[in-house]
Length: 483
Image (cartoon, rainbow, N blue to C red; front, top):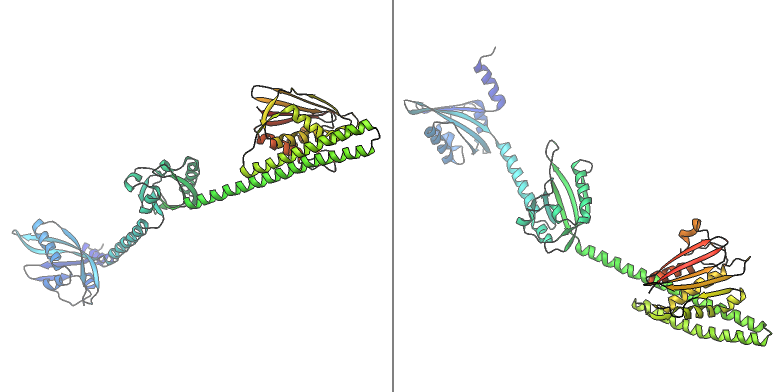
């Protein structure tokens, strides 16, 4: 077994701990080899007390340390800077203890340890921390350290400027307090994924409430700082104000909606022109052909009268179409008080030739007292399309019968338009009935626009339309006009 002294002499160099002693009575100083290495002197160097003190940059500090050790009679410790014999600067930790005989200090001893590496590391870390704080505080975007519970730990000047809060008030809040409710769940879900280690970072556009109550759009980037054991410490959030960008996006979106609506109105107008004028043109052509082939004078006169009526109706239609152009330009419908019975009569007159050619039996049960405000061009288009469809899709095995009736309720007018035509399989095609370009009977001239127009025009005026149909038996359209 080694003696304690032998063990001590072996361990001290391993610990690189310098051991020294000053005998004040004899004026002798002892340095072990480690002390000499620290001071970078030869192993035969023989220091005096004054020479030893002169190695230190702050000689007064080392003298005070000695005085304090004598006064307190307790061990003292201090960290000081010294310059070695070779001119190198080192940081050392000096420990000192005084011994006394008859109340007089006779011996001082202690240790010296080179802590240059540790001091430089701490200094570097402090420098890096200062650089981080400078970059954090004066970053051109909002920066924040946020606790795992959502509390603001530290915020920079730009974030306070973005949100309008001063730092003192903001640090009393959580990010949940000022996040828009529509964005909070998404933010929290990603935060929990970050805490669980499922993701390493996340980015999202979200809304904060400004201190004045306004909405601030930001681009948020979040990472998570962890300790050496991987335990979450805090979130690091970068927050960039994108309110102006979002506002421009929304303005572009609104502009696109306006353009889309205008295009839709133009398409609607084109279809109205196509259907309404085609109905007039077709009827005029048919009446003309009938007049030319009719030998009976009385019947020919009757047909000529119908032709005159159609010419007047065509003029009215052109006026209505001009009004539709004005509506598209202003975005507002020009409503007129319309008599439903007269409008139906006018429409049947427009299609008189087609009805006569189809040998249709038309029954109209509409009180002449039913009047309501509506767009004339829209009502004409609705009635023309429904009546044209009844003629076009009649059952070839039956005489065509069309029944039109209407009644007034409290705030509605219910118009029923019933035929005994080919009918539609509502189970298979009911959800497609009013769709654009949907056709169901294979007619060569069918375009699938009429019923789509009818539905859109009815709904544009606040009404509603439904259909009931049985294949081979006919179809009933039920329109609810807002009174």
